[in-house]
Length: 501
Ligand code: MSP
Image (cartoon, rainbow, N blue to C red; front, side, top):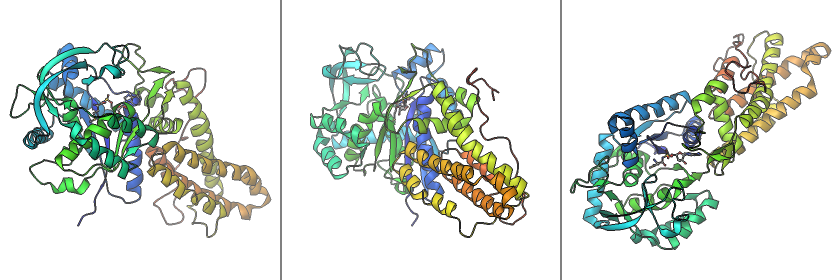
């Protein structure tokens, strides 16, 4: 039997706005985990994609003067292009307009109608059109949506309900039996309180929204965009309520579902209740990360302060962005993005600590090892000390503590820089040339280790390092290749200007 793949998901991104660094963040984190596990020969299935239905997207498309599907094609392609730029190693990109997904959603809806978990009724409530969600009076802030700050509308319509209330106890039981299901712990309490306070049935169809998956038995309704979108995690790898799928069995249950904190409730409460209703095993972990602000402010259309990942990549390179986003803030907490903080980290951590270490060693290796690839040192204390950090780094990545993992890697980098400063190999060359060669051997092997650690975080940098370190070439006498500096310094006077180095 094939072993189950480790299944990682990101949310599906709405196509009503162009991607920004907030979107890049969730996907990058998933990518690091995926690459790390693959590096340990663990089979991985990594899914991302786009959320394309609903009134908001229809409205945006109409404003742009195009059909909704044409608009979705355009923006969905932008997301894909961005993932290519950012070196995202996803296995499957799902779109909620995919025929297979839509058929799955329709079949699920009909199945739950049959079992009585979906029923028809009438709804009157306070609605935020941007969230496409209903709110209780108490959840609004002075009558305004807690996410968008716009006034909620009182609406009334015939709708289908999902019997969420029925799953209150089963959910609480599940949370108690699986304390890691809602992660991190400090975010779980909010959801526990929400469920314990009592769940109400939720509306899962829209009579007013044409751009959506039609309810098969009642096409005057479309399926509520969240009910449609959440199912992607199952339909993507082939789930269909009436047809068994070996592909689905091969990946399910999802192992880690990464989401932003504002959509934790959908993923930690509604989604598992839908799965309970379908009799499908629940995911192992739903992890909610924090939000990025820009110079202390929320990113928003009105402020026009979106930071596009492409712009950062153009100025600093893809690995600097990958590094910064995962290093600056512990994964789970909120953080602030500023170009100044990015430049500071770039110069200090990448250009100085890592870049200088690497070029110092490579220059000396070229000079004193005559370009020969060194043999693995028989007994190197430095290498052993460095290697002892590997399990801790791996544990941190697996606990999704990416900043902690990077901190440990940089402690290793600092220890190598200290060792060089202490041993002064440039003096050794004159004083004790016989000792220099084994010392450089050690350093080259230490850098190979560092490159391996960096691989999930900064794949381009790691492969440049590997190339120069001659990884993969085993015979002595192969010339490591010479390449430009890994991270040319950025000067302060004109931050971020292209070519400023
Ligand atoms: N379409 C829904 C998700 C459906 S999943 C079945 C959605 N899309 S979104 O495009 O608005 O957001 C997708 C992800 O981007 C979320 O995880 C969200 O937290 C993340 N981010 C969007 N802006 C962000 C920041 N400013 N900072 C960090 N992440 C943010 O919600």
